[in-house]
Picture (spheres, rainbow, N blue to C red):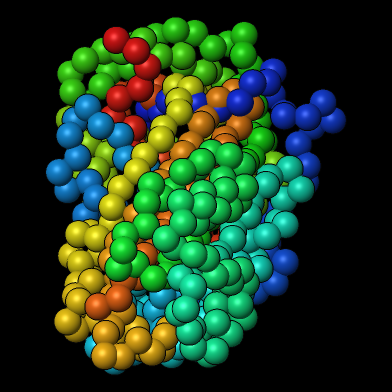
Length: 416
């Protein structure tokens, strides 16, 4: 069960605008339901992906220094690894399926669930740009199995290309694709290609949304953000008093900031003094997250939130091994023969790396993520005050399905 050991005051960076509705004519009608009901496979993918999200966050935040921030896109990692899993066999498939929290699902159910989720997240809000792209990059001479290529195209809508990995142009070609798919926010995902690497599976996610109720630039003031490292930094603190979706328990305060028609939202979680955002998120799982997300109610909120910008990069190898996928990285045991037959050698995961970006300001949010999987051979009327001027957690999510797109911890922001 979820334990929510904090109280909330939030500060996040957005885009420029005047206060009130983002557009002069007022916000668009609120989206009350998805265009269609989720299939059983899609529901299990959402639950599994969210369970993976919080488990991955726990591993990544285990030794997070107090002067550091953290930003992951668990959905991007899940999709890139899901694409690799389409070519995994035997023990490797079982370990990856368990690590991604899809226990009991068949290969076809997993593929159909990913496909449905990709289609569902596209075009829900005309005022929000949300794109997911996948690609397969093979070294010249590597004969990919037709079934793997078919699964990549059918389930992940993946582009497939062959490159001369010995040429420096190969790295630039892959990086250019990632940059194009992330609005230029992730310009370089790969620095080099190692001699034993024969395949890259890439997922890219781009999000750009305008607040349903924008912050007024004239209301932004400089103020102190009290960092987890004990240092106060000067930050631009955005302010508004609006009818917002709000949640308060004995442990935390939270606000749900909607974009556009409400299909997407940023959830800001402020723990009580003396507790950390990592502790707060560490108590969440898929079920407790659903319960929390369902608990928001409209209230008048006097909100102070910092404007911020985060860039983050992380190797996920150790995190994924800790979640049970170690066999996939083992040169002697990994079995990705469903991707390509390279006997007597074998394919294994050489690295899983992710880069992320988010910027929050008065107008809205822009965020991007790219994940590379490299394979080598071998209530009552009341005004609530929410002052986010100390460490907080935030999630960007599809509100109606609950799908977590981005998940972050802001321990420090601003300048000393």
